[in-house]
Figure 1 (cartoon, rainbow, N blue to C red):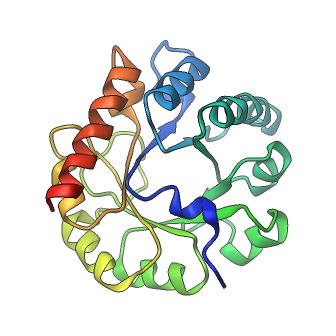
Figure 2 (cartoon, one colour; figure 1 turned 135 degrees about the vertical axis):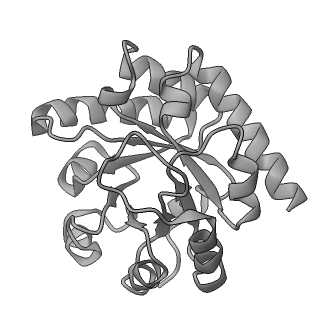
Length: 218
């Protein structure tokens, strides 16, 4: 099967997770607007344990923001909501719906990304048809308590074995994003490095520039 066009737009960019639980007092829509306008390639809405109707409302609004800025929009864990609001895709973890199950809900053009902490997991996700492979956590992260360490060594190993876009995730910030790029990540996923910044737009722009420069020099 030919790669879905949306997946290629991930390559080379910054992927921002917007989570109401990790935005301090900032409005999530303001954060989404700031990051999208500052050059983020992807925004993912993650709102664990919130009622479906609240997540759907948030998703509709962020989908509009992303469309206006030519930014990919991904919904965490909820393919039904992704299909309903016209998101570009869904992101799932190892314990969520399978890629095949997501495909039965999503539209043909919508993509599925999957989290992986181990090389074997990443290879399996790729073989099952994941449009992008998330690898993490690369560094210690405060936004997820149930994640397993992967590190740069796993990221390098996955980059050597998988041809789908690779998104590095977990504890990434301006001071370590160059190492992530040099280890083979096609995209760097961040959360609090942007969402807790005093100026999310400026933080996003710095990450975009640092990641792009590191990819050129690696």
